[in-house]
Amino acid sequence: MKKESVKIVLIFVVLMAFTAVFLVRMRSPRLGNPGVKVGNAPLYGEKSNVVANTSVLLPEHVPGFHLDDPINTPITHAELSILPSDTTFGRKRYIADDGSHFNVQINTILMGSDRASIHPPQFCITGQGWQITATEQINIPMKEPVPYDLKTIKLSTSIGLGRNQTEELHGIFIYWFVADGKLTPSRGERMWLIARELLTRCKLDRWAYIAYFSTCLPGQENATSQRLISFIQQTVPEFQTTTGTPENSSTRVAQAPQRGEAVENSF
Image 1 (cartoon, rainbow, N blue to C red):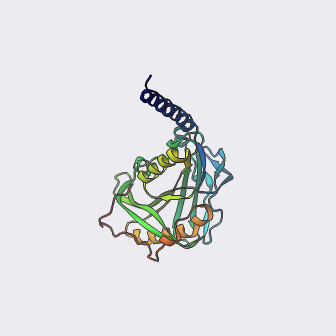
Image 2: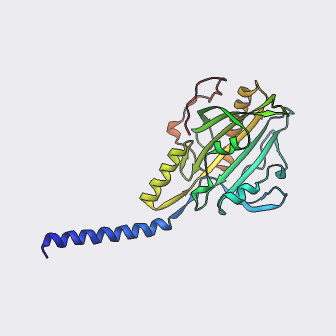
Image 3: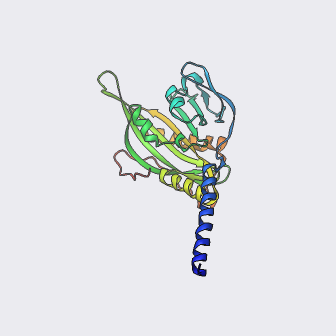
């Protein structure tokens, strides 16, 4: 056999060996750390039963607010049956003490070894009867633990009330994705980062989806948005361990959009 043929065979064998090793490693990637705090705290289902003893550790005490009864914010049977068994949840509703009826629900979904734990939140919102009326990306300036801009997606929503759906309730929904050392509001960027880590480091990042939701009457959207942003600034440092880059921080306050403004679809 000629030397050139031997070289080609050797190269082919080496490539096959590397490919085999790569495929074996890809079948069991190293699982990354979460970008949120996780610990022993019970979560409840629709029958007021404990469905999980481990959860994302959302704040227990927020000045000016009290916690709603956890049985009023259950992890639903649909979530438990559809999402992978190693999914970790976090869910709390906070009610303002000032009698304004302002309340915020924080919802977190942390994936384990299965990326199917997280899907576009728009599916769930519209599936619950809400209509998305506007979408935009907003940067929320954070002060703790370091100054940085938290990039998020804000959805303005509405739902009809009453038998004839003649009255409306509006909602402000702000969300983003976080992993250990990574933050993005974009599903596309999150998928790219997952692929990059798998290919270059054989590591599967544990991404979490974080959402804040508050309802209001028509005409109260701007005030509700600003109060929700303030609540995010106050509570995120309590449970999210990943921050943005301080050098990219700005002092601009994220403004709520005026109804009818053009927005960029970033998800």
